[in-house]
Image 1 (tube, rainbow over the protein chains, first blue to last red):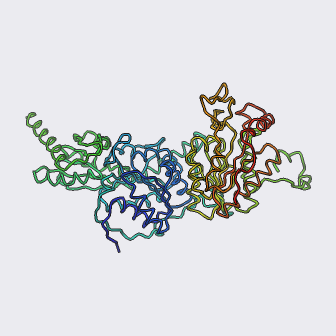
Image 2: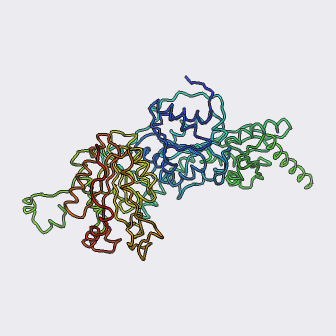
Length: 362
Length: 261
């Protein structure tokens, strides 16, 4: 049976981590996600989790490497500047194929930026971030409920593919309070055996070593081919998205996370005005739901991408749409959350302009 | 015994040979890639001899650094992780916290431990993590071709201090081991070396103590090994060991710096 509570997004995520059987948390305080560390330092420790406040995000991510290499379910969390500091370690973790959870409660940037919510880390999350050819599975929650639910999914995906998984939220999702129901989850039913982990060399097996170093170029190319094959499998099986009011839609808004919640309301308002608009909400930002977008694009008169950044995901939308429909962008930056009315205005402008253009063509 | 040594002997003659010195089971069959005379080979061997003698091969997890010993896991026949440059003690911290009944050590060079990894080193020791840190100090970056290290001596020539290290441009050699000894969480700090058979024996004792204290949950054990780099120092192995005694020891004198009460 589930267990329903009213919680902050950060706390819900932390509570879910305990319930998901996370054995080690390593992190450094940074707004707007410090509640995760605080919650686990109290509640996590009481329930047997190793919780360590590290000296930096650099140390945190390398502790995650060590803990994951030792076969434990481990995680870290931070916000944008801290996640930037972790990028080297994330690249090592991806190459060494260590399962773990990384949480980014995105704040406005660049630089020290602001502590307010942002989606400015999309590129960093889905295009690499660190060095070399690697991918993260990126899950984008848009409610406190999903802040909790995606923790279980993230750990399961990480273990299934031996790959780091990123939950990309934002400051508002971390700070706001909503009802959240914790589903029943028995870690023992989900955590696979990890015979590759460094737990001490037993007589009956060869030594295990965890590394990302392969000096021979041919050998390193093989490692890369293996990783790319794994990423193709993930792209084939793990795409997740939500479609709202898409069946008769002439226009589609594409938005994720908090921007998708705003856009959901905008869809309702625009429909009341007679604009036939739907919403595509990517849940996995990598792998990206390109196929669904591709399949509906040719019957659309326009696509509006709404993001809390200068226009990052819009590039992936354009790659998927491939010119089948015009792609427009509306974004706010620096920690500003767009309101549904702004989105409707942007949509109206597209619709009316296109109507005007069509009239001109006549 | 290696085939090269015994190839001139008949099978019968080989059988009559008495084995007086064998490779421990805790070393793999892989040959060391280290330069002739380099201290790493000896330190690896001594460390693995101790693991074998204490019968803790199945409970020991080592963390290799970035540096000349980056491939330590090819030689040490134990479970190991290769850490990012400077982060071995952070990696070791997590392994030990999650597997508290195992023996965990980090093996690091001077650039790794005392330059890029200074923060991790100090905070691991300050938390008193119950691990052993093996610190190989040869006053130079060997793997990248002989650049100045944080422990490079004043006046010492390297590829990035071509006229000799000066205080004006690079400050003083860092006394990281003495700094570490000031931290209350640290149980055992010693400075050893491997330039003579007796020094090797002393180092072996230090490793044995390091594992023993770890078993007793005493806190961090920090073992510096003043070592050489014949290639980087552009010397023969013998010259290097002589230079080490004459120049390294006055700055980095061997001996215990802190022992458990």
